[in-house]
Length: 163
Image (tube, rainbow, N blue to C red; front, side):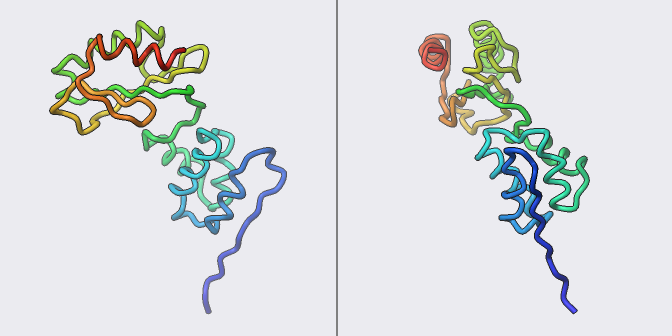
């Protein structure tokens, strides 16, 4: 006797693509990370309202799905800005002016680390190593890493993402 996988198709879930994404992955609990990645790719974030839908489809608790979605820093439960700036907070970058860099960015954008500007243009996040220790301090802007960032290099970057 072999186990049979039942594909669950939740209908009536509004505009959420979560049920279809779960079904594409066979509603398998071991595909949770892939499902979260696909959902975030499609929607731009992992809506909290989709966590219960995913949990039901995968026969997991909502707490389990929430735990995975919040454990990994690359998943976001809320929409991010058009641009994402990540400032490295690892030791090498901190010792080379990372804290001062963070203060400049927060002041310029008028947003604290982890927040998004009121116009939804820029989200500011911390990261804990971009692998550019030799060229610290480093930031990542929309997936592009930039080393040796100082006030002079920072100003045109901030001007570009806020225009």
